[in-house]
Amino acid sequence: MHQLLASPQQNAYLLARPGYRNGARLPELHFNQLLDAAASDEPVPAWLARMAADAWGLDLAGAPMNPTVLVRPRTAWNYSRATWEINKGCNFNCEHCFLAQRTFEGMTRQDKFRLIDMLRDAGVLWLQFTGGEPTIDKDFPAAYEYAYRQGMLLEILTNGSRLAHRPLLDLLTRLRPHKTTVSLYGASDASAEALTRTPGAFTRALKGLNAIQEAGLNTEIAIIITKHNAHEVDAMRTLARELSDTVTEYATISPTYDGQPDPLAAQAPGFLDRHSAFAGCPAGHTFFHVDPFGQATMCKVGRENPISLLDTGLDGLTRLPGIADAQMLRTGGCAGCKLSGTCRVCRPLAKSSQEAKAPLETYCQHGQRKGVPA
Picture 1 (cartoon, rainbow, N blue to C red):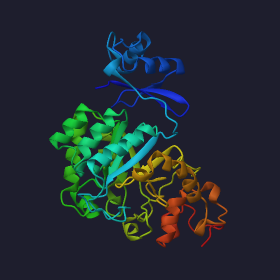
Picture 2: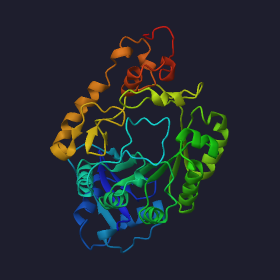
Picture 3: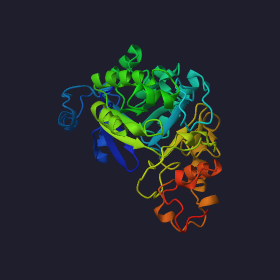
Picture 4: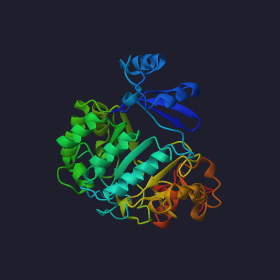
């Protein structure tokens, strides 16, 4: 199995070690040298051995290029990242979930492998497995290993409940993910169970977090602030700092992506996210989302005009930038807003909130200020 990964990325060339966050840029000359020697038994170049020793403490002196270094070829496509909803099914029943339905269905294992091949050929280097709960999909272990072998840096977005399961933990320890992001729904059994509507949710997540910490995996905790746990925010922050490398917080609860208002009931008053002004994003241009049936959209929220990759192949992605741009237009309830230049909410999220007839203050940081359309 490869220890290092060299890949084109936009207008640059990157060197990475799977499971480690630090990496380096390569001059084009060095990347071409690796590409020419990729399938050979030649030893890794001396300059690469020095880089590996400096960055990761790896001793690659005299190691053969194959299989030590996996070199991804150039591609005509411009995509860097993708999220893949491998299955919408979940073992939790969270009140705040943005999925319209949480059904266990999707592609066959062979079609999942075929999709991974297309993601690789589209240039995707960073791939996030999401759901539902991705780790309960019967094909997750096989799909994860296959994507790893194709030279992708993998992230798992999970509720943490399965991370201590020995076969899964062994897989992730052997083939280290780039990052494991665990959602934290409370600092006690009572608060987490109230939100997830699942007995033992907190205990299982905590067990999973302890397991991956002991395994030394890169971990991020996403604190989800709702009315059920707002009184425990400080305790959640303390716990998250103890168990992870990185902590993020999310307090703005969105409707389902098709505009159903039910998740909004979990919103904690007074905890609206205060991010910087939204200045656009690369969704649909250098990034995209794929659902359990291979339907590609600009992102998890903006799901208009999906493209079936299994039917169209990568050629279907030529339509995605235009579809994304159309969804980013300020229309509907946002048309004419004089404060749009400092808006913190992306257009697809605002649209789903408007379709759900959500109160303005639940998604618009400007609230009822003058200049905001009613």
